Amino acid sequence: PAILIDNATASNRAVNLPEFLNASDRIEDIQLPVIRIYRLIEEAQNLEDKGDNAGALAALRKAEQLTPDDARIHNDLATFLYNQGDNDGAIAEVREALKISPWMAQAHFNLGAFLLHADRTADALPELEKTQELNPSFPAGEEALAMAYWMERRDGEALRHYRKALELNPNSVTALVGATRILASAQDAALRDGVEAVKLAAHADELTGGKDA
Image (cartoon, rainbow, N blue to C red; front, side, top):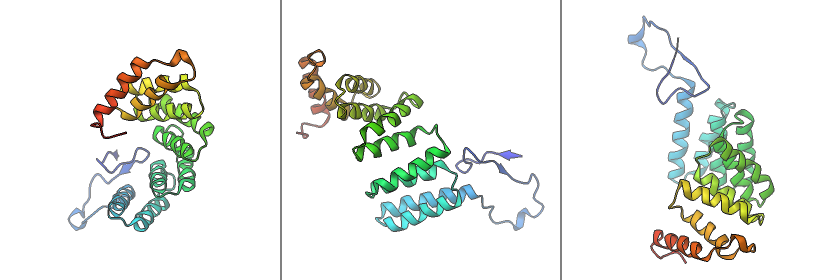
């Protein structure tokens, strides 16, 4: 029968083991493919922490070869490539993740963030909107969406999403500063509110200990 193995069974994998093992005393280990994948991911994280980026990339590529249909591997690889400055490679990998799992909110968020980094704001917006549709309680997604709208000079929508981000996380300095910027200097006078801008800016200043100009 298929059974759940804690920290080993992937969401799209079934694990079947014999109910009786007559030779169990001679079996030292049962290797499951998904366990090998997790070990490679852990190895990659440890190597990256040690500064061995080439080794970390090799481990992730090996994991990708073992399970090319695992969206999480492609998403993890995309994040690694982005952190190493390979934004184009990151975009390609996260698109592979979304081909496999179109409902993966984190992958939509990552793609939106990578596209923003490439100044492709119009392309990033649908990905970030999809992120919030799939995960409405994701403050970082609201912040990224607000930033994208602000970059498109759509201050009203940007402020709306900054407010949502602050509802989810009132102590987000990024959201506080983003909302303050619009409240203090929006071209649309209906959006400006100096009193609220000062209040939010003061809270951000308090959170950063007065050390952020």
